[in-house]
Length: 555
Image (tube, rainbow, N blue to C red):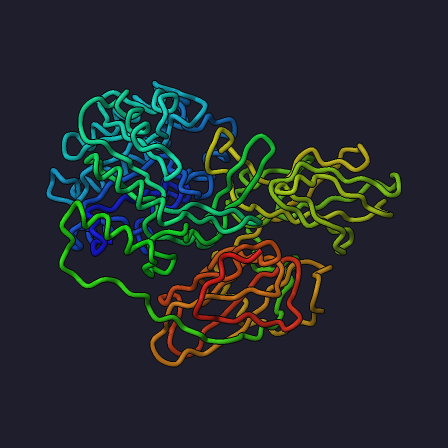
């Protein structure tokens, strides 16, 4: 990034990453924020810090922790709601105390700190809430860095996102008129530099849609116009990323639901693996016409590993009574939400007995968030899907049998007015008869090492009519491990783990993402282990392969 002529880096700080449960803070490993900030300073980069509490970022629930919905189910997120403000203040105090030595006024790299995020796009327009947040930031940051806000480039959005005493900036992409966008900013920030705090050189992609691309020519044109005006520009995203594990969010609301890919490559100037694209060099050329470029070597694509196919053997059915991944068992007259069960991500199995006398065929109906595999007496009967708005399914000869719904959380809404996106099922009935007396089993996959000692079981390839299956395989790397991509072609839908690291969701039946990015630090010289949880369809070959090129654009 420095080689491209950039002199600052902007980063969100995700509340849910750093406080996964109330009062339990995490600042190690991938969550080592201070180390990240120190590296930025070593690389001669200023920092624009964006600690939220809400960040969007296409992350689950916009970076808000799921447990807010468990602790206070009727909580009004992103408002002056006393519970939300209390929890948010505790989090912000923790993070702002930690980064205070790294503020510019204290000799650190942080020159700007953002309050909230695009608040003008949220329905609440709660000015008191924004003022409460500002008080927290002013107390901890003071005059050691500039406080600012980011909103869409329209007066209607700035009206609710603006805070007196914080610098108002706007965000927009290549489809917007540069002059008009900055005129909107000037309505609320009449003096000071023009700032586009999120200029989009790419865009996000949802499952089932073509990979989104932004033309380099359009980026160059808009960037040239902004720099000619003397504006400051922050690219979002300049470096693509990955929503490892179950961290990707979803867009939607009002009955629409579109979850994002695992990959957050974003068609950015630097790819998911950090490789420069032609877009990178075009942007650098424009910057070089306005600012001196650093005298340093330009980045090149890192070598990638082509480790070939891995044979996967089935070792455990997820719904097996001896499954080591059960984290909670509960009962209730009505189904409980994931949040009420303290299941943040992944899956919950809901089970009940069907009435002894109902119509044949019967119609099962359930409000589903987000996807449910339907079983009767452990035999697959169909799927309910929030994406496809399928909330009913006919069932033949269902009476007196055991009904099981394996529900998957595909990502909480991260933007809009419905981010209190509880997961699970509700309003379940069969041919109009409400179903009660539920057994619920929650699963979590923070540690899959217990699968290493299991022996192979027998299953048939093709559709998994008796429930999801874990499969395991080994592969050997000679020499220093390299970045690689796991090709999931021929499989259905599931989750992949390499050496215990959750690579995230795969879904080649829907696309467009076919490969999962595997960073070299996840691998080791010698023997490595690949584990997958396949939900729906086992490849006839029972193989996945590690290859040197990504495939993010196949439908």
